[in-house]
Length: 231
Image (cartoon, rainbow, N blue to C red; front, side, top):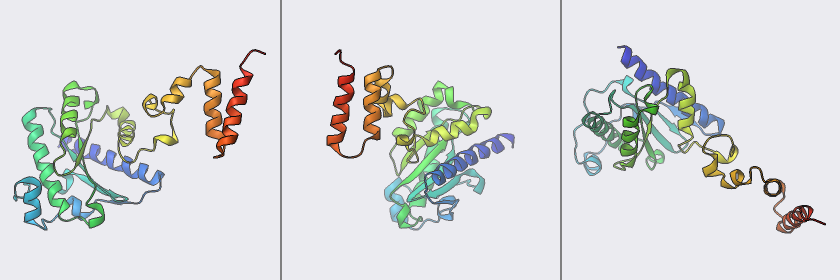
């Protein structure tokens, strides 16, 4: 029972982090829509094409997952098993792929083109190499829908861990905080290269502050360069 409670808290933590991030960037959300939580199989033909089977998943309860709509995206948040064994992960993945396929026959058309299945590892799995290998394998699987894996950090860092995961999703807005996170060398290579170079830093500042008039920008850049040259 304690393990189940921890699992539900992890799913809820990620759900709440995604809702918070969506609202921060002005996107509308709908939490726990019936078509995702407990979808009805609308078409056995579609389901067969998606999964190769028509049997509905067994042993579901409402507490097994969280879900939401964000803008035109549909999101399922579901648990992975407690251990990273191949058999356990594969069985769990098949279950949630089947659930996702049924959901695709039931969700409104505006959400059908971008169903995201987010699978959540156990608490503290973030630094575990075996779980990281599971993450890479699962995220390569493109059957039925896009898949992502959240490996939570320790309980003390749970909120931060969930927020950092959101930065891997469509909710990320890296251009708002180019130098804020550890990934800035990837998304802002020029900013990193300019560090410690006074001229380069001034040029980047000019580029960011100037109007769209290219002639004005060129004049400012040339003038800045001339100031650095010996007289």
